[in-house]
Image 1: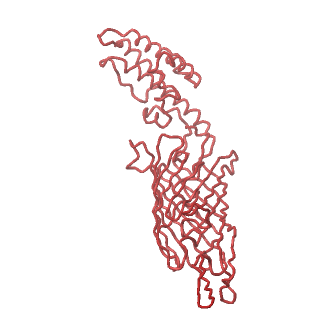
Image 2: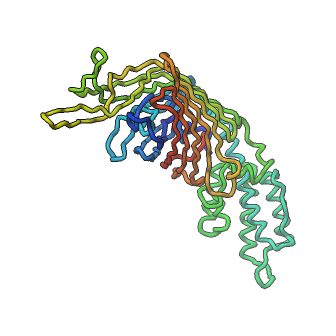
Length: 448
């Protein structure tokens, strides 16, 4: 892993809601729309990629990108947006989530992250460790060719030079044998050559030295070539740490298990709805109008990382709007014939209000009971968000997204499910429960 080229996949408080309501709405209101949130929690982090959430009301598409910068004060940026289509596949002015009015949301942020550091000493010494571990892999392969009584156990903490010396003695005492019990001269010669090459470079290995030795293996020694960089048995840093505990005395300046991020963002939301004007308390149903406005909010985020746990808090202040559509009907009478023309619209022009918003997320990746031997990376979050307009009332939400993806792929196919509970003091909106399913292509779920 190249710690000097860290790409942040923001796993909390950085993306756009991906859930949708499946509950029934109060009589006389639309199935979509009201009280938009701008607290941008998501079951997937803000990294390059996209996810799609599907519900009975429509489809929500989220796309995002995040990159690091070299500036020491502001060292990363992030951009994200989401849009919604209805069940007919047409663009919708409302999110699939009833408590989420707009169809388009965006977030543009800049901040400071402890992840983004040169860590030059760590990178250099980590390379030294990988070379030592690679040498030990080759020594172990030589040991496997020896007959049973000659195979030895070399402690994991022993250096390349010492391991080569011990293995040479074992090879001399118990050379490889073929099926008839005679010395296998070809295997013996190959083992001797490998140990000779390693012994010559054991105290002065570099990536170029490893590359040169591997070139010799490529055609003549597939059993040893498999351990070369890029081949099937080559292990990355974390795997070699597990394979050779105690050997990693070369690495200095390793990143702490505890890391943090702090950033601020502009969060625009485009909201739009048809409405009928109200004049002196009476609705003018003769002409349907359309209201569109870009709502602006500023938010601040802090995220804390420790091993498999992530915790984040977001707070902000900005504009929200309640959009509650009604089935408005106009009665037309001609003689003895009466007809009605009905359409969904608000009665009265929407009135945006300033609101305080807050949210928090606790995440575990991977889940402990599915962390090993499954071939999958699993994750879960508990999300809570709260919106409180300055005019009174409030809305809150709890969501529990669960997701998984192949653990060995550079770009993973991610699938998950998210149950969501909503509470709103507005009696026309009320309390709701929903379940959404989301899929997408994402980088590996990681804070690096």
